[in-house]
Image 1 (cartoon, rainbow, N blue to C red):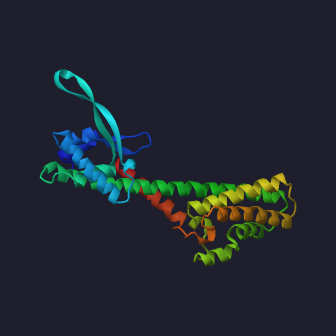
Image 2 (image 1 turned 45 degrees about the vertical axis):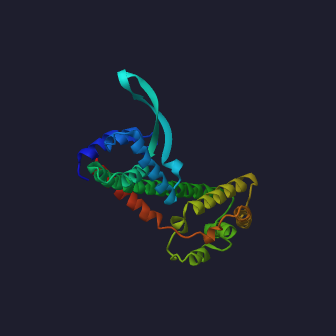
Image 3 (image 1 turned 90 degrees about the vertical axis):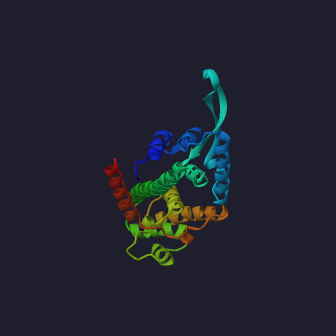
Length: 271
């Protein structure tokens, strides 16, 4: 984006919260957009709030009322109304601003770009949570396999399939067919956060049961896995949740990992 006078002013006024999210204060944005009177600028904020509500977004997530000390005559100060504004709120304000003001068009372009960047960041954050959860499930499976080995399990495919039958109501190959995944696809690599969380819970609970009940032998281990996990399935149903076999498959976690690496490389180039 071209470094216009307005863009530079907005870059200076932009603040970053502790969680890394960018925001503006309305009084600072007022100056950047060259609104002399607060009452005129607040009228634009009101229009932006209406647009926010009409878009289906929660107003309180983007417009947070606060106060600010402002200077009046003779260097005296008083408390004045202000807002914390998300990037999306600023975009809506710019879109509802006075089109005759030359800075408004520049601000519209600026916040359109910033809003898109924020959307991409939010998407990466959501993907990041899924990546973290998948890594946790993978680690939990290693511990479960270790507990199964200690219990005398030798046919690990049958043991793990007993868990899938308990959670999904069918074996692993049938789950893949139900979700229209290829035979070579890794089910958990195509699972969303809710499905991964259900699997993490069934894995950790089964590991604890094998150890606590001192389970011994292949058949008893399979029965324990299936029994414990069936309770997890019943709990999901009782809570009104979507059963895991009915959750839609997600894009491969491996592709998301590659995409994340690419995004990080592009970000490092920008810096």
